Image (cartoon, rainbow, N blue to C red):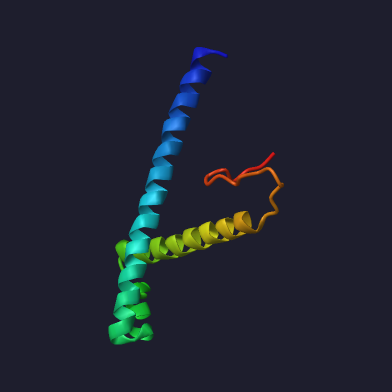
Length: 106
């Protein structure tokens, strides 16, 4: 492999890591927004709390980013729960211990 191809791979790897960090930051922010919305739903009702979370027609980019991060967090938590459910339901072999973190089996 040439030096140029190696350097391109390094740059792509660093950019991919940056994108992953940004995506997980959005998931974290969206989780906080969903928790605050849930707390507000107790006091003000679910309709008013959800209306505060969703962006208005003339909203800024930050309003839309908040709505996107809340939706992204909801989908990420839903997918994580589904994967955990599938992992727990998968049949185990008699000698297998099922160590946590070992999601893939040969």
